Every structure is written in structure tokens, then in C-alpha cells.
Length: 338
Image (tube, rainbow, N blue to C red; front, side, top):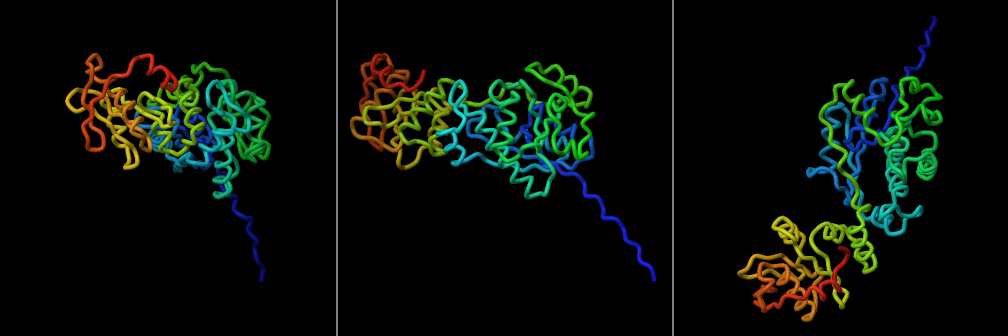
């Protein structure tokens, strides 16, 4: 009797793709899919994102559905905030630790790659597109610190970079990869037209950490031990003031912000609102003393429609108080940022 020995079936190549939902990441994913590689998309949700009104997760979900790939979403939480407080590689123009941020996301991408027994990670990064994190030295540093040296493929710029492990092993055809570099989006837009991709977000989003005013608020918050996710949510809304007691006061600038502040408020906060005159919702975060309430009530009066009156009535903890608008000079000594 004879037995035939069949050769083992070749496993399909797998890759984890960082998918923000922006054009670059969509195109990178499409290029990898065209090589018959199985793609698992990974998206990160940051509390500092300034993308579309519906958020990064919405754009990533749309892109994943368009491409027909599964999507995993990871929220950047308390561990990410701690990273921002003490980044190993420093900050950019504001409080943006771009290199450390990329190391964070690549490290989690490596975990997901290992979980799936995938072969490599790929991104939509373009050489020279972002000054701090997408130059050659930074790309190599990020790979090294995340434990992905040689296993990060950047399809849009790959032929300008050294061949990666998946290329040298023949898992990816290098000749089908591209040579895009710099900040112009014309090559990407032309490629999108070739693929018939029309519905993609404009590059208007970004990161609040690069905003100088937000960075000033964040530095102040960290200096006062305010580093929870709720503290970060407060930083995105209203005018901010630091009282002599160390307490923070947040003043809404419009109806939307007033609603947001009302939703963020808890029983431990002190909430102040005008009684009969239109004006802002004011919160003393984690409550305050009688003196704190007097000052915060003065801020409420100053930013209400009664700012030119001797005083207005405000409601605080079930009581009605008379509040005199603070002078601009006093306000400037309390203001955080611009």
C-alpha cells in the first residue's frame, strides 16, 4: 500500500492596518487588499481628536465598510493621558508628543498583530507629510520602540524606504507600492479617482494637543493634578479660570457649551446659572468655598446679558445670590490661556 503525502496548504497573508478613515489610510488599505492580503483594520479614538463632528470612529467605520474589512476600535484612555504627562521623546509645538503617540498606537497594533498571527502592520503614513513623526529618523525610532522593526509597511511611500520584512519574504510585491512623499495631496487624490473612491473626509481634522490655547489649559490642569478623562472633557469647553484657592471655574460660551457643562456636572461640582437674564452655565469643578462661589458668580454676571448692570441674580445650590460682574482686570488675572 502506498501513501501520498500532500504538501501543507499555504496560509493566506494577514496584515493589521491602522485605519483613521482619512484618505491616506483608505488608499494604503486598498493597495494592500489589491495584493490579495487579508486586512484587519485598527482604529484609535483619542480624547484630543478634532476630526469631523461625528468623530474618528464614524469615519473609520465608514472606511472599513467601504473596503469590506473588519474593524477593531481602541480608546486611548488613562494610560495614554499618563504618557502625555511625561513623554519620552518630548513635545512638538504644543503638548503634542507625536513620536510617543505613534509608539503607543504601533505597540497596540503589534499586540493585535500577534493576537491574529498576522504577518505585518501597515499605515497610510507618507514620508515627509508630518514634520515631527514622518521623517526617516522618526519612522525608524517609532518602529524600534514599538517592537516592530522591519514589520511596518507604508504602501504610499514604500519604494522610497528600505524594503520591509514582508517585502523581502515575498509576502508583498514591492513593485506595486508607491513613491508618494511631501505634503501635497494631489497624488493621493489622483489615486483615489483611479480607484473610484469619492467619499472621503477633508484633511481638516487634527489634534487639540497642537493648539497653543488648549496646550496652556492642559499644562495648567496637569499642574493641579487634574488628569482624569472627565478633566480632559472640561478642557474642550468654555472659558477657563483658576481661582486663588486652586479651584477651576469653567464658563460656557453659548447654549451648546452650557448643555455640555450641565451634562458634565456631578454632585461634587458647584453649578451657577443666571435666574432671569440670559447667560452662561458656570461650574466650579469639585466645588468651592464661599469666596470661590462669589468670584464664580461674578464671572457668570460678567458673561451674561447683564454684564453692564450693577448686579444680577444667580442660582447656586438652591439659593439665589446677588452677583456683581467682575472687572476685566480681575478676569485677566484668573484666565487660563486666551
